[in-house]
Image 1 (spheres, rainbow, N blue to C red):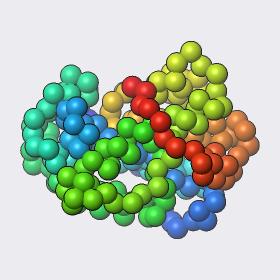
Image 2: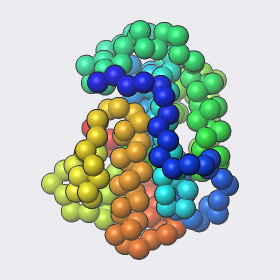
Image 3: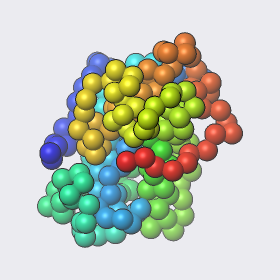
Image 4: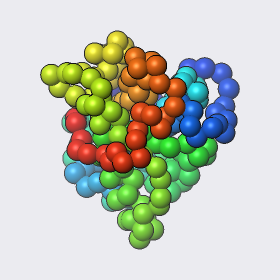
Length: 204
């Protein structure tokens, strides 16, 4: 399934600056063109304000590593989708505008590694950003036979979605976090992600 660049509005309104202790964050998911972490070709985000998803969006990226695609079998994205897309820096600047200073939440350490590798390739250094690991959260709070994204989502009643569609995955990640927060009656992000927590390995 190949998806469009069009944003999907879930609730009206734009995100606003919020108390950093509130349940506000931007779920993020990257897809890569190849095994190279810097080969980001797609990013999806879901912006959450005070415990509610405001909107989601998706952008194709011209990979910093070039147009060699070996992961098309996984996500359906090819060089043709990305050859005229903006590069990494302008897309990430747009993502940062939409996130309005909120921390990122990703389903494992993979997405943070893409962020770091792509910035290192583009600018020679990493750009600082706060990433929280929803996979670690799921492992700490749920008892499941598998912690893959679709399994964790289904266990919490999240509707089925197209795995490896970056926007769908970001939305699923956001909803997993919100469902766990509701389950434990948590209304502050800091209670879900202790400062000592570090992102670990990826589950695909």
